[in-house]
Amino acid sequence: MSQSAFIRFVTGSTMTSPTLDELKSQLEHYREQLSKTGAQLGWEYDSAGFPYTVETKPEGEGKWFYLKGTTPRYRSIVLGVGSEAQEDSLQHYVQIVLPDTATHGDKSKANELGKYLARHWKARLDLFNGRTMYFNPRK
Image 1 (cartoon, one colour):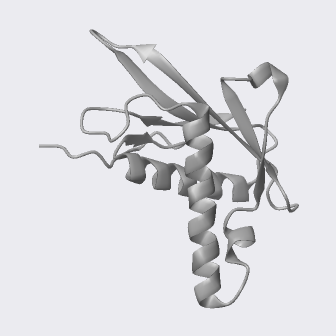
Image 2 (image 1 turned 45 degrees about the vertical axis):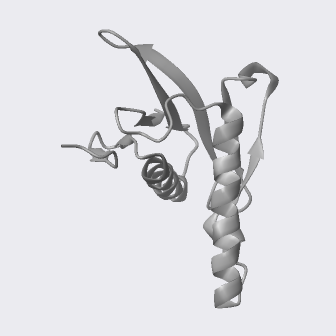
């Protein structure tokens, strides 16, 4: 059974409604940071820290894309954007889905990516295990 985590954009978030292109560019920025870390350490850290390629399918055009693993330890992670109606407004979110074929490595990387994105966007992260992490400024 697949599992989902959500990055929800709440009051205080730096972004209100991301697009797939913005999500892809943020993942590319993450990969660039890993390559700079690798350059300082003297090894190819970006391929170990982000062992995926970004793939799209025609049926997911404009809604979702997936990260395809480049090693046997990592298979796939699906990322998509959406929104849901709240009491008086529309709440936007990024959904991270682990398909049935996902490995433990995929789950670890999905948690890592979710935390990175939520911290960068100052959003609320609902993890796979049901717990919530708040990166938005709250009073």
